[in-house]
Length: 113
Image (cartoon, rainbow, N blue to C red):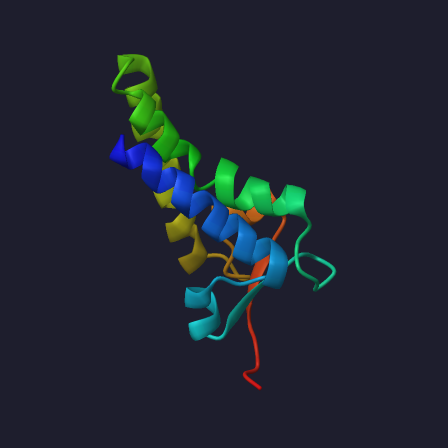
């Protein structure tokens, strides 16, 4: 199905760029960089937690919701929690969202050179 195809494209995109260079092209355009607590690019486990578990699970549950009302409801609940996690960035002193806390990552402003 088309939504599942979208996940098959976006997950490698976000995981690959974040793991290899610490930023996707969009994050790079904004002058930002994803780091861990040691100020280096997060390891693969952290990137998977940040990009797949925290960001993609709601979409996966919504797609699976075509087969189960329970999974559909879980997808909406997970999506609402993730949305609140993004809104948390507005209040957090380090500007970390729920996905950053789950992945142990930070997003910082990077000097353009």
